[in-house]
Amino acid sequence: MMQEPNKSIPTYSDTLSYEDYLLRKGDRLYIHVYSIDEKTTALFNSGNTNSRQYARSGTSAATDLYTYVVDNEGFITFPTLGKVPVRGLTTRQVKHLLEEELSGMVTTLGNHTMLSVEVQVVARSFSVVGPTRSGRYALNKEKVTIFEALALAGDLSDYAYRHEVMLIREVEDSTTVKTFDLRSKDIVNSEFYYIEPNDVLYVRYMPGYSFGMNHVTSAISITASTLSFGVFIYSFIDRYVVRPIKNVQNTEHNHSSEEGGTE
Image 1 (spheres, helix red, strand yellow):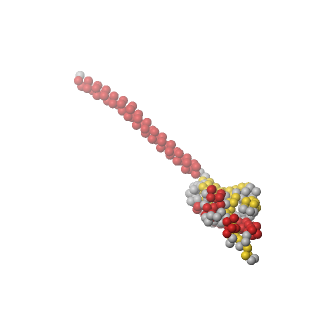
Image 2 (spheres, one colour):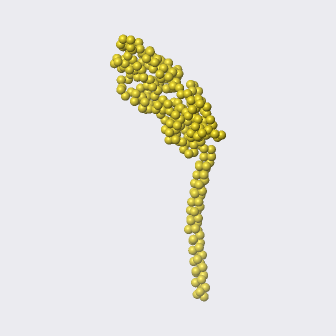
């Protein structure tokens, strides 16, 4: 990886433009309302001081209890406000929206509204499939590069085909598949550099790996088994067929010799 582009390694144009994540259906939001009014705090929050930790724990029960799910229509259901449209918004925009909607429901001092809302996307993950530790991994920060993602998966093995890595990404109601060469140094400036929630990285084995490893291994195994079986058959025949015949022949020969000597 990180090789200079040449005839065999492609050049990628500078298309790197990290943008804030836009909420999609199925996303889970941890929302906490801060206020100097204890009643307001108790009304909008779970009352558990460890709710943030539980929400980010990754366990389904805790996540279900302390998060709001973006439904198929793009809404979350928030106490007193009902359905709030959040699909296509950033967490910052949702924060400002909720603060504006809730500002009329809290106690104020002077001209300052004593209310603040924290919004985070939790239970975010990506997947890696191929010659590595295939599995699903948590996105524990906003910006995760493709190299960090592969490091979480234990890096690629020596048999990974880095020439054609596929990035499968959900976009609105469709799925896109893009292929790129992971060896190119230009990858750091391309659209493939940052991983998004629910991305899937698919890496193929090197061409010929199946024959070069699996077939050769199978051939060696079959050959070894055949030789072992052949040795067994040879030993069996030699012990129970050939040796008894030789013994009989030797006995007859000795007996004939003894008779001839007697005469």
